[in-house]
Image 1 (spheres, rainbow, N blue to C red):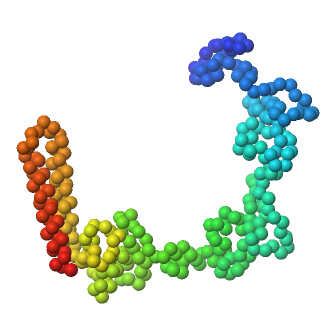
Image 2 (tube, one colour):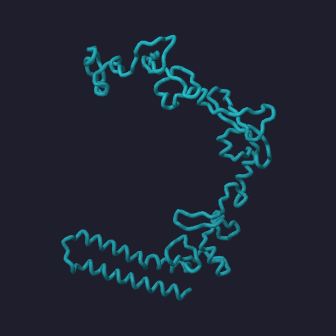
Image 3 (cartoon, one colour):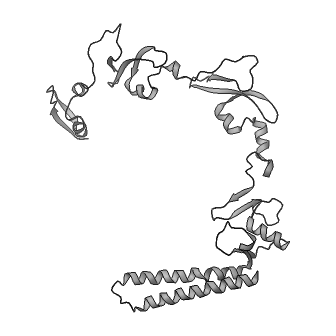
Length: 301
């Protein structure tokens, strides 16, 4: 840490100060730098609204307080300036959530109370709730009530073991994967993966009236993975599906991208460059291949 010996430009007090602090305070000392606060003399026994004072802590730090009135109940008190904006001028009692009264001996479902923790770490709001299964009534924290939906510990463990439509987290059994496919919950399927089967495979199985083998693949004609209409699906083998993906448009498009990049690098190439001719030839081949694939798929259907 580097310090510099300077004098305060207002009071002339000389002292050692860190370089970064001198740049931030413009060389002013602690007393002169805090003159922006109005610390005019006030009556300690009868302060007025808006009076400010500085509190000195044992470690040498200071904090500024202002005398204001609560915006709700009107109680006047000293408040730290850093808390005025955050609390909107309200006192501690007005900031508390006011709960309606309830019968201590016979609480009803939905009654709320403020619970003071035994260790003194704070308070929390509890609600009198009943378990939806065993109907056991007890006090439960609001945060825990939102997470568990009011289930007690024993019933929540039983609910976690339930699967399918019996589970409380059931959302219809229809899920969309990251790859864009749609999965359907089907626990009794022989080829199900974690009780889920792809929807386009189930549709093809209903059309054929049998289970599809793992080697059989259902291909989407238009390339849209969640378009599972019957007229958009075709059954192919793994070899045919691999040729359709590698020997079709994808392979030719990769070749075109490589050739177009080479053409861009050779900016001085003429109009009759051989690279451009090859690109035109590949594009024509792609067009012919697309037409032949569509005719082939239509004949298979």
